[in-house]
View 1: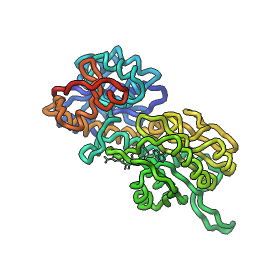
View 2: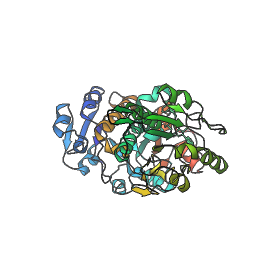
View 3: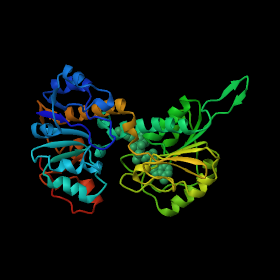
View 4: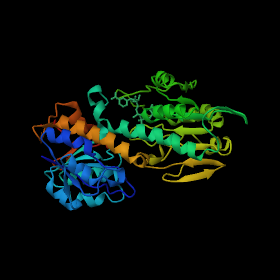
Length: 391
Ligand SMILES: NC(=O)c1ccc[n+]([C@@H]2O[C@H](COP(=O)([O-])OP(=O)(O)OC[C@H]3O[C@@H](n4cnc5c(N)ncnc54)[C@H](O)[C@@H]3O)[C@@H](O)[C@H]2O)c1
């Protein structure tokens, strides 16, 4: 069984799906690894490092797709809406592809992927169970995004983060407010605290309170309660517009008093709620910064322009997308470890097993034999359920 790593094709993408250090683990498990020349360069991994660890190099993208049984990518077709379409013609029916496929993005793209006949696994669908933690690529990328969001804010803020007592007077610490204390939000709290800021956070899931406090952040409690705040997977449940309206009213004062606001409030497959209105931006001090980590799907701030940095009412609003790609070395390292754990889970004696009794395999399998086979994705797009799949 040969695992192939093509160079990422999304413009500006610097990550790579496997890094040299994981290659020996795959070889030990019976896999061979073929890497497109230059695939790791953008992330700081040289071709020679892959070869030294036992991988082979392919001269072209076409060669990788033609020669391997399993393609591993960061941004696969569904999540690469610029150049991903080119891969559709390269996938083979007997091939498996593992990567970010954006399974709740568009029915059309999931169906197009299915129509190639390829067997695809979507890392976004990884169940949130202890056994799958080492394979959880969403958490890995969210960790990177939370960290980087704070640095982006610190770079733009006309103030320093730490409190300093100097001969020239006392500098007060920056006040950083995080909305949505999931994996990214919690990492943002830690990073802001390490830089000396005063960090506070709000989340509609009551379980987040203890996590925020354990990182030294202040948890902001609002006098509203979300209905069934958390689903069985640990994600927030979608709320109605009346709830968001009330949230905006209550968040107004905290936002106005913050130097930096990092909203990261999302619900899988749903458009992120607008929690920061234009009026709220106006209420912030000039020079304040918002880093909208929900920008990729539209944003939590009304004035966010996805992919851009804008200044509105004197406030810098950063809506960059693909933030994890800006820390490519560690993003690739974490992703490669996640993929390797997943390949070792699927593999037996160098072959991939399709044991659909297994929750991890069943939940992540997106397409197979020309069909969209994932029950959660079918339900999301109101497709009729399939008869039980055979292994
Ligand atoms: N294997 C595991 O057990 C596992 C793995 C990863 C994450 N988790 C847990 O799952 C939870 C969510 O993880 P995530 O970061 O991937 O979630 P996410 O990226 O889907 O959402 C980010 C955060 O936004 C919050 N949010 C959504 N709508 C909101 C609103 N209107 N107002 C305020 N907050 C809102 C969510 O509650 C969540 O905490 C965390 O508690 C995390 O620790 C568990």
